Image 1 (tube, rainbow, N blue to C red):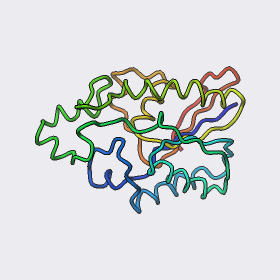
Image 2: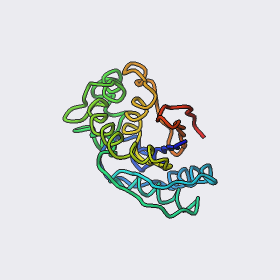
Image 3: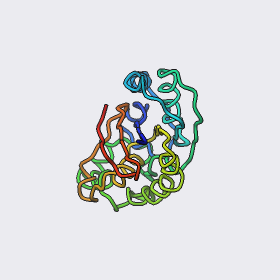
Image 4: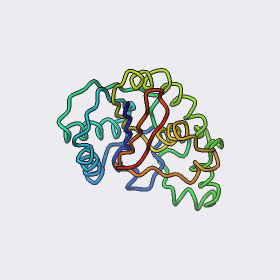
Length: 200
């Protein structure tokens, strides 16, 4: 049985400051590094053959900490398909101040809806159009060979992947928030059918 585990990166500086981060390359806070270390501690005993991450420092720094914790040196593939979704002109803005300007309801729509884009940005549907083909064409090929795969990426790129893997509807995904630094494990049978999923 193939094993896929994904982890959302640890807290970034903009997470801490309650800002829209998107594709801005923002590093981890001390708490974020601790969250990545905790994820690694939970993954001790698991063996991975390959890891995938985005091009953004907060993701690959988290991956580096996790692999250090589990004392594992494996091939690492970085690809922009796994980047966080682009928040357009909202990137870098404080979420509370943005809600005051545009209204809480509008900001929540931009953040959580499936197919409504923030100004000049990507929707979750747009994000899925790059994440899911990359998963199907590259990552799933490793799983089909029986290899165990670790992905460290972002809240929205992983929400798009979760929708695909767990057959979550566009309506239901709006309520899903992936916690930072908590591994989510997927078990597949020999036919690549999902046989189990849970947070560690």
